[in-house]
Length: 414
Image (cartoon, rainbow, N blue to C red; front, side):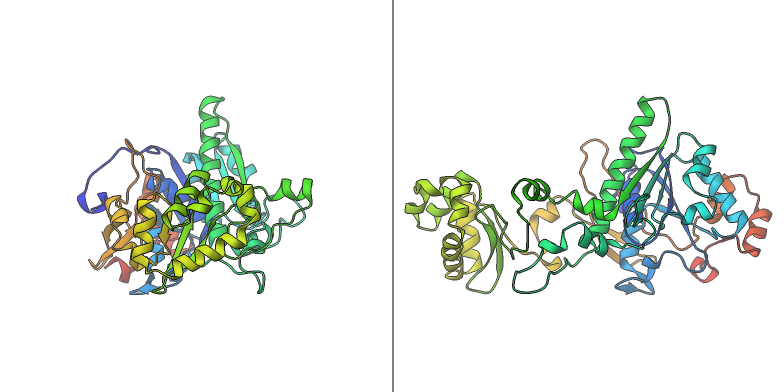
């Protein structure tokens, strides 16, 4: 059971931190989701009548994306027309009280609206502004549109993914956006820490999607610079680290086996009846194993293919060799490790239907994150947030009538 269901109130590490989200879809909103899960007060600005397009992406339940309920959990939705002068003025007021603004517009868009770093920091010198974009705030490509897929391509990930006899492939999730969101959250928190200990001055955190992916590419750069080596596609094999690959059992299941540690490799060979290879001096280190990778993968493939999944898992688990099936989401729902660590929490949709959500990561022993509410209706918190800013009910009525802001729609409010 999650805190969402139990009503438990917990102290969180970001309690008291105010974040203003000016973003849509994945990278910016995923960054603020992380902050909201750990206690930050996140006010999400959405366009009246439209809202974040993620509300209608992928699988819907009663007209709303199930992804939305997760991505926007613990956030407040305020519907404001940024192109309306009074709408922009409200955002500036919110930014004056904020510790952090997170945005993922194309560079220059917020400046045209009078909501750029220069304007916001002039009124709030302690502000941290986290800016996510395809190519960053500077450079010759800065004005080009760039989604996560472009970042994955330019950052080097796509070039190394797949098999050599066919075109590169992608992962089934928006990994480039998610990686950028993690860097953005880290950068924003580092900037807040700097502000705390170095005089209270804010700064810009500039996250480019292609650079976020590029930062994950391990030894690619020095290997090319020193040796002229270009990392390419290697299928399911971990390049240069042997053995670590995917194998198929007799009953047709796919397993990952990672036996690339020296002692682990020895145990692996003994477990599958190849004591001769366990004692082979050339195979005692990764360098020697990698030279004989084709031989090793052929014999591992043959051994796995000769046994059912249960036998392979039991044998290797007992030998303390890292092994795992390739889990589908259905496997996760029944796995004892997932269940014991509360990685599938239960909440309830607006109509009362129970829904499982991914648990909060990382796990903090004293100040854990939690789900307080699911992604809100569009404009659900407009009136509450504007009232806190000092707007009287009649003034909010006028702003709604003039199209500067919007409350939650009447049919959703019911």
